[in-house]
Image 1 (tube, rainbow, N blue to C red):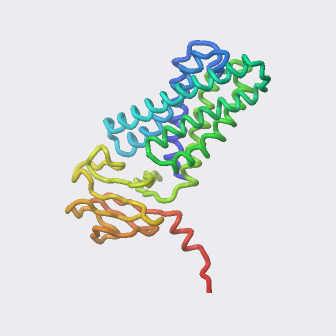
Image 2: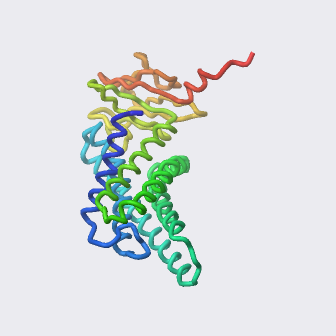
Image 3: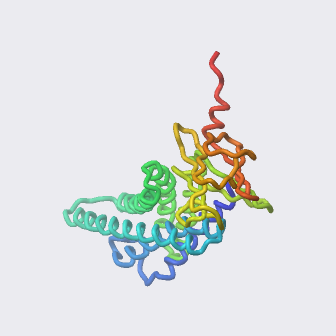
Length: 291
């Protein structure tokens, strides 16, 4: 597991919890049925802040690009805040209709579906950002257990003693932990850049990964063409594709316009060196040959 990414994700969750608590104005912040207005605002704010912070903090730390980081914060925040607020409102209307009909539903079941709703809203945000169903499934596998476990402890421990600040911080930490664990376990390809002092910047290859001077690129360079090269996935193989006549980017010291990458390849951009890793390459190398 990349230690820096672990810190970034958990820090994002804790900050989301702290900032949401600062906006908290009384009552149970996680009881949508009994305290609709407060719960709607705090839960939507929490999910929106987490989505924005976990997307922008790595950029701010690794690229030190404030404008790009701000852009990566605003878009996920607005999307997630809106989805969570809409989903919470619909959930509240459905639950009130069921309760008014006289149907007896255990409180634990209602709480389970409430935490599940927050996990789905947060996962849908990342699916919209990356335009990928695969990302939706991946994040659901991380967020659902994180929300369910954290939510159960919040309901049974923190809320009973009115430890509202701790409930925000604990939920944020657990969501960040669930995010980093599932992102690390299910990663297929990534670039590692060693910066010394035991620090490794990790860039995950989700769909097409672009490198260039444009703020729209996944990795923005200080100078050079707007798009220097792409790393795309074709038939479970990541491919390096140079997009300009600028050959400052090389693979293992050689100039290529197009090259299939294998685990351990070194991509150099000027003095910077990125090492490509692939989980699929390692699996193929470890599979026994059929004689």
